[in-house]
Length: 269
Image 1 (cartoon, rainbow, N blue to C red):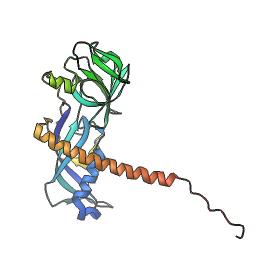
Image 2 (tube, rainbow, N blue to C red; image 1 turned 180 degrees about the horizontal axis):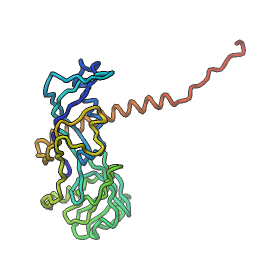
Image 3 (cartoon, rainbow, N blue to C red; image 1 turned 90 degrees about the vertical axis):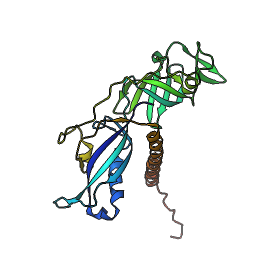
Image 4 (cartoon, one colour; image 1 turned 120 degrees about the vertical axis):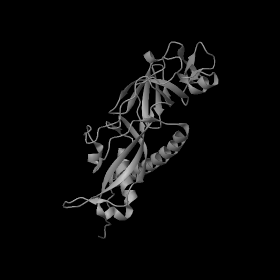
């Protein structure tokens, strides 16, 4: 699947002295706020990261609450879909007018009827809606199918992708692989991720986190198969941690919002 890139950055993370005995945990806590949000510096969504502390020494910053800066080398996995890229996702809802897909478990995609090629026709089979090919028997798309589609547009604010099944090399992945339908070489434009030293990027997330980049991000690199498997494992671990923390937070909020029953007084009181 296209749209996954690796970017490297040398950062200085500012840590409160009270966290000095749990340095790595403090660094990861700050970087985790970047996960699953679109960022203009990366021109994409941060899915995972790996951190290497470059030095055990740190520079103390003066102030009422002095912090110390720790130099780290960070590798980010970026989800950066762009028009005409080919993505893969799971169909979660299908109707006569549209197909709804989820990519990487978090990014929603809508493929409208006008973006579905005429070869694929909607019908009801065994009580559920499917899109079936009139030209290729056995090529069907239904809820639960893994499909390959082309990116039409991207709404960066809500991380919503508009997809297309117009190209002939898109459709149900299982059928495409079985019949040897290969995707063409990636011809989508690569966005530049390199910033000059000292150049301030728009809406800098590092300033928000109390850290600043030492050098600009290096040019994005395509993910090879070995790195992709490793990254997918990291994504799964970080997604599970993120959802677990979110579930605990929601549970606490719900328990606090429940009205407490007042105790009835007995007649003898």
